[in-house]
Length: 118
Image (tube, rainbow, N blue to C red; front, side, top):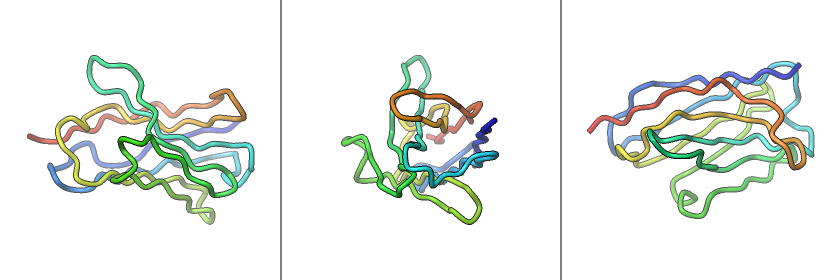
């Protein structure tokens, strides 16, 4: 059973870079049909797809976030990282990592709350 666990700071200063790690257990991040995905949910709003890295290394980003978003793999540790630069209070959200296998999300982390101080 694949397990995902988000890890990172709960509080980030405006203008700084948010760095989160998705720790993947019992699954290989290099599987080509897997999309390791970052999704966030701001307070009172719906889920927002941010981007993903495919098992083959290809990355995908939401266009409005692309300029300040980077998703990468650490294949040696089976981790997926998210970096979001120049954060503002509008970036405060619960951040999830999730695995999409083909067209379906099959595993989710529990989410981690990130607050950007104002």
